[in-house]
Length: 285
Picture 1 (tube, helix red, strand yellow):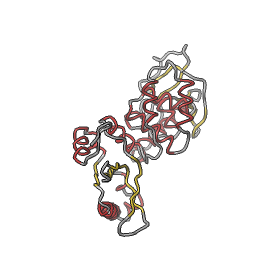
Picture 2 (cartoon, rainbow, N blue to C red; picture 1 turned 45 degrees about the vertical axis):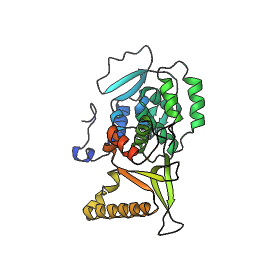
Picture 3 (cartoon, rainbow, N blue to C red; picture 1 turned 30 degrees about the horizontal axis):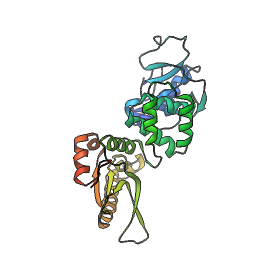
Picture 4 (cartoon, one colour; picture 1 turned 120 degrees about the vertical axis):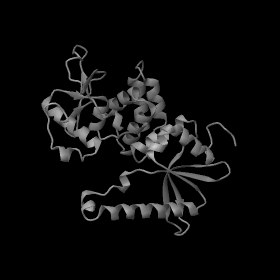
């Protein structure tokens, strides 16, 4: 029973991605409470945005100022409605995209907020210009609006996923120059063929530093692949990754590879980037 009065087969449900689980909880909640309008991170899930795992629960519901927040169970958080927008996204009633993004960026910290807004730009659901105008029109006097505007100023739709966005936010928080994203370099062994790195910097002396976030998802076999030899799938993916990285090294660039957990260790990440020569903002070398 992942949600009160809603049931799922445990073996099947536990294999789902956490965001898929959160979406199913929203759908179940809507069936049980069709009059509810979902907001904040729940609305972001309904819109298909990259909501970081710590924000996937509880379920967030928009209520009128006259309604009580205390009557709901602990798995539901109620919020006074700050707008009158109500749309259907994937069959789920929620606040519209622009209001949802404003609510999320006002409430979330820089790292999580950047992941959410980056995904909206990545999927081309909106633009920075449209969000800036909306924030100016509806954000005046709102708690957290300065944080929201700061997060929006760094938003970039080229980020492939939420983890990359969070890592970029950490790099910015540490004071380094903002990296370029999806950096392409020509493969020395195959002229005209471009290899792409997650992010990178071009240093004042022309040296290129490339950073690769080593995510686990690329190594996970699908159910069919696992049945037909999941170990072989993982070996093939790892071999292709190592081959690509060796070609990147042949360009003369400094290639940094680290995991998401290593990036969360800010002391480690700071020392790694410093050793590679990545400059701090405003520091001349």
